[in-house]
Length: 353
Ligand code: SF4
Image 1: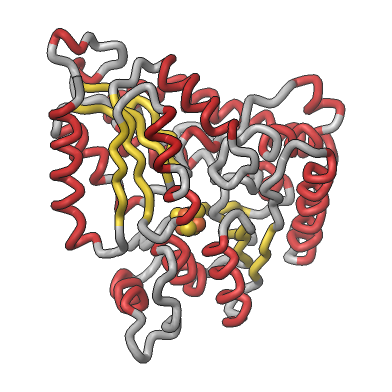
Image 2: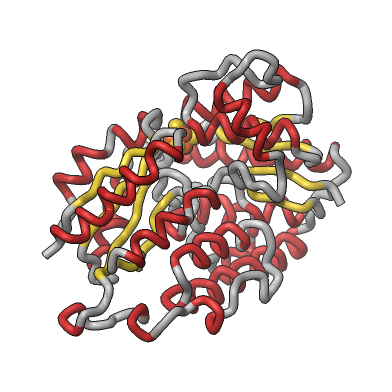
C-alpha cells in the first residue's frame, strides 16, 4: 500500500484513507523513522549535509524537510498555512526526492469562494492519489471511512481525561493515521494515580489544571508533560497544533450520507480554529469556551522562536485570557533550552493562585 506523509490538521485523513493509501503523520526527529545523527547534523547546516542552506527556518519546518527527504513514503502533503511550510515544500520540490504536494489552504474561511478553493484542492489531491495508485472513493466508501474516523476520535476523546498528557498527545497523532481500535495506550497503563483524575479538588492538594496552546509538539517535546506533572500540574486541555484543538468537528450523519465530501470540507475547513485563519476569532472563541469548561488555572503558550504566527498572538492572548499565561518560547537547541524551560514551568506553577 502506498504511504502518504502529511503534517497538517487541515488535510483530512479520511480523504487520504478513502483513496486506499496509508496516511502517515509526520513525527519530528523520531528515531524510529529517521537517523537521529542525520537530523542533528542537518539542523546545524554543516557542510556536507544534503539539506544545508536553511538556517533561520523554524525547527519544525526544517525537521519536516529532514525526515521527509529520508522517508520511504510515496509522497508528502504539506499546506500553505505558513511561510515556513511553504519554504519546506519548495525545498523538497527542489530536491526532487519524493513527490511533494503543496495544498493551498486559504487563510480566509468565511466566504463561499474560500470554501470552493479548499474543495478544489481536495479534488487536486485526489488526482495525485489516483496517479500514485489510489482509487477515487465512491460517496458510500468515503462516508464509511468518515464514520470510522469519527468513531475513533469520539472513543479517544471519551477517555482523554484518564490518559497521561504524553499518552494523549501520542494518541491524538495516532488517530490522524488510523481509525483502528486499540492503537493508543490503555487507560489502566496511563493513569498514574487517583490524584491526577479530572475534577480533583485543588484545595485537597490536587494538581493545578493547565491548558497548553501553540505550535506542534513532536514526540521529543513530550518531556514537557512530565515536567508539568512533576511540578504539580496537569494538562487538561492540549490545544497545541497537533492536539485536540485541530481535530475536525463531529460529522453530521445526514450530511455525510447526502454529500460526504462537502461535509468533510465543512468539518475541517469550516471549523478548525487554527492560528493562521483570518479572521481568527474562532481560536479565541474555542479557548474561551474550553478554558472555562475545564476549569483551567493557567495557560501555557508554547511556541517556536521563529514562528511569526504564534508570536503575533502573544499580546492578544495575554490580554484576553481569563487565567495567567506563560509565554514559553523554544529554540531548536533542546540541550540549552530544556533546563530554562523546566525552570520557567516550575516558577509559573508556583505563582498561580
Ligand atoms: S511552528 Fe509556526 S512557523 Fe513553524 S511550521 Fe508551524 S506555524 Fe509554521
